[in-house]
Image (cartoon, rainbow, N blue to C red; front, top):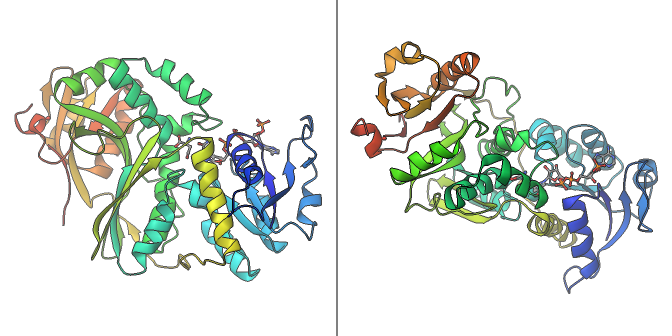
Length: 403
Ligand SMILES: NC(=O)C1=CN([C@@H]2O[C@H](COP(=O)(O)OP(=O)(O)OC[C@H]3O[C@@H](n4cnc5c(N)ncnc54)[C@H](OP(=O)(O)O)[C@@H]3O)[C@@H](O)[C@H]2O)C=CC1
Ligand SMILES: N[C@@H](CC=O)C(=O)O
């Protein structure tokens, strides 16, 4: 099977090296082309800057898109599918927007569109979710979906390093996106959660402008210390629940007691959980970012094509409504501005530097936080786990589905 790799960065190079190493399973794979920019030096014989040469090459069976971003990735993926080539991509940004279009194009052209590496890096999460869906309805998904932010929060907690210092390390290690604001502002988690929810509920989330997303850009060493002193670790979490024809969806920092699996998920690792009606809670854990874990997931998809292993068929045509009120929770907010009146309905109490907000609908919390950021753009918020002692003493309670 001949493979063209579009983009020769962290993931593209990883795929190239795994294919070149050729063990028993991969020995029939070879790289036909590597697509690079026009201004780049061609240091390998497979390199080309001519995309048409790849699309028109009848001997190339699979295109691995590892460019990142929306365009030209979207254009090249569609074109490859229309030229009768299977496509594998790790690019969650483009899939989150065009999953249905790519799936339809793959079906029309009788080829495969696989994207395991796009969520959870090396973790077989999409495969696990699809397997669960063969039997169950999956009514919630939650977890740590971003390696860079987990690495940052983990290093800040364990080694007391500053945010800026650790972000640089994550970039050097190849974990961060080309524009790392996607990692730290929660956009990358949002993309991965959209893809997961689309598959789990067989929907096509189109309008993402109203979805509540709050990242870790504003977290300070002192926040991490305060949480630690109270027995908590902070993690950037993506969560979705489904109830009847409604679903919710949120990306936000959340506290976890120090003995929990989430609190003990280190470095670039991800921990993603689903809840199915017969399987119950199922956890998926592994490296969520980095060259070889991600490339491994890409090559696994290629091997599924070689072995003619079909993935679950979804048409993303169920109609479901996003509900900002399906879940409520307790939050801590740190802001230099006088914000108590904004939360007057939700029994705010002062906890040291923080305002503790009780049982507020998640959508409402995020809406008000936009106003808070308008008056102080360094404000930070964190969601509290269910039954947290901090919230009940007035000292930190919870996010619970209003079932
Ligand atoms: N790194 C990781 O751990 C993971 C990454 N991913 C996803 O995989 C994809 C690739 O990520 P990664 O390898 O880290 O990114 P990199 O930035 O390391 O690599 C992307 C490569 O593609 C090249 N490229 C971008 N646009 C073009 C273009 N228009 N024409 C030709 N070449 C282009 C870049 O060149 P240049 O440098 O000149 O811009 C670069 O060499 C992204 O979608 C990312 O979200 C998914 C899971 C994990
Ligand atoms: N930047 C992403 C890469 C993998 O998806 C992350 O840090 O998780």
